[in-house]
Image (cartoon, rainbow, N blue to C red; front, side):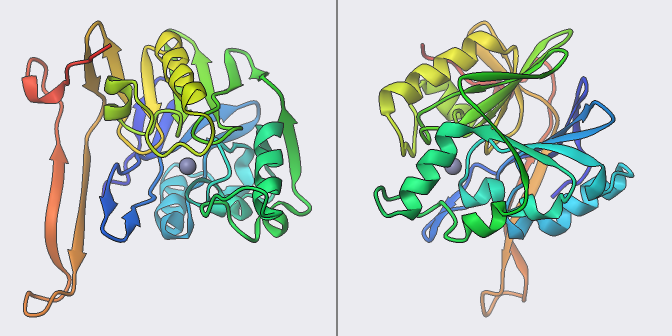
Length: 265
Ligand SMILES: [Zn+2]
């Protein structure tokens, strides 16, 4: 796993998400991104406990302490995006009112969503929370906006500078979802989820998906930005202890047809 962040203008993708699933379920490693914000830093999503070591290491490599993070945007309240919020004691947590409402309904057993943490109330206790409806401007050129579908209160963040960059959360989890326009793992409305994918397509030249590498959309092709390298190792007797099962490597070379995928609108 690389810990060198992928830089896209002001955005640092600290940990690119992993679009993998296993026979024991979705491998919930989400994308965690950072950008300068007022006198501190803004983190978009926090990952879960399995990410803690690498997340803190990635911040430390940039000489940023958890106390320097003054704003955390939670794309939604699934465990794989929100469990590390407790690492950031000085942050204001920005999320959609609708997502808080949804999580409360899940906790009251009015809806089923096993990815909402049972201990959410204690995670959010005594935190500064800024809940919004529809959209919210966070600073010059930065806004968060609702992208319902994956969950009813999912949000994405747009940065308008030289190019429009959208941090998608799970409204677009991976490049396939973008290419097909068909949402996967929908806990809210499938129709809303499709509209949210389309809205993001129209808003961002560069997209940072919730569980995949960032990419640029160019006409009918996508072009990944930065590299990634990760592997799964296992103690599978009689293989050597901790031996690697596979490794995904990626290098962007212009003109390489393997680096882009056809879009099918
Ligand atoms: Zn999710």
